[in-house]
Length: 437
Image 1 (tube, rainbow, N blue to C red):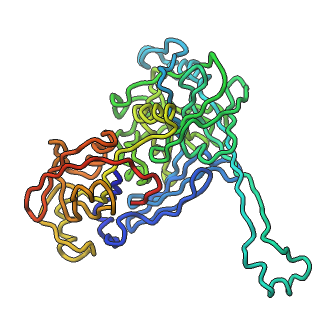
Image 2: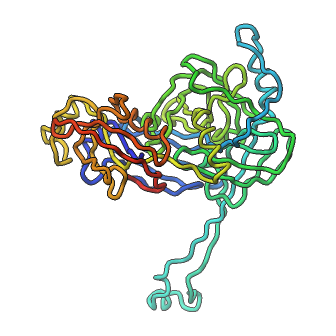
Image 3: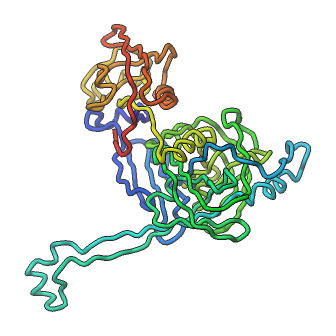
């Protein structure tokens, strides 16, 4: 479901009719993009591929906070169950050296990823103008000149199968011509990207090897704030760096994290992560991977974000088998409806072009042309109250329900339209990657 949602108050202060999203200028992979809104700005920088010449850095501004820095890249995992290296230590309470033991056991399965991409460009066509030729004389080229430059990025990853499948962030390897994987024992192996998903920032890389050490995966749905969090990666080229903190929060929306174009509920941690940590594992006290380090807040200390391992596994399985991941899509832009939002709309403090009668629910601000929502008859101004009988009160809830469904599934949507109850069946479509709506 392509649902771009922002903090409602900030969203409604913008020109909602023309756009309910921040303006984004994006160069994928080893590039940089910015996003702005009227609220306080939060910029995140993808740190995974951002340490070498050009790297892959992602700068995002969102309504909620100043600049932040995404730091991890995600690579999908194979469908095969990863094997573990050895039995990992019990809780910290019974083992004061649990961090050291975790690092000894898991460290060999954490890798460095160096990716490079060749960028080609040519001199502008305008240089063949007679004015320039008269000025430069014989030194003026007669044809547009081709030039090339190599952009390099550095990130981390972790091995999930002993035959060489590795998970890392999409932004670490996006558009790469070559991917070199360096093991902790110093071996350098050429990798190939099995698949990359920019929507969740997960990618899967494969190297030709056998009997490799692997990580053990946990269930990220069971983690709680206050638990230990251990990160291993290659920040700023400092290989095999270990940092420790706690789980600060779970279920942070992409908007909360300042990356509104991602469809992920992030884990927040205060374990130190920096550029080059992208794609590295975030682990619990038993050394089980609970997430992948992806972003940090550059304007703060100790605020980082990781993609939950359950999300990674779901996407990685698709990438490893199909080479791509599919995301269910409805095609609406929406906002969480509150009394304050209603007042702003009805007082004329927005230009969305309609009034609202409801006090709560998920307000449909725009319906994307040709989308499943439009075909089903959903309109701007509708207020969604339930999906498949489940009450929804926030845009994030609705987004998560759609994301959890499969492409082609039918969703029963109960909504209010001009104070009248409506029930609409929508068959989800495949999320059109690259669509800004």
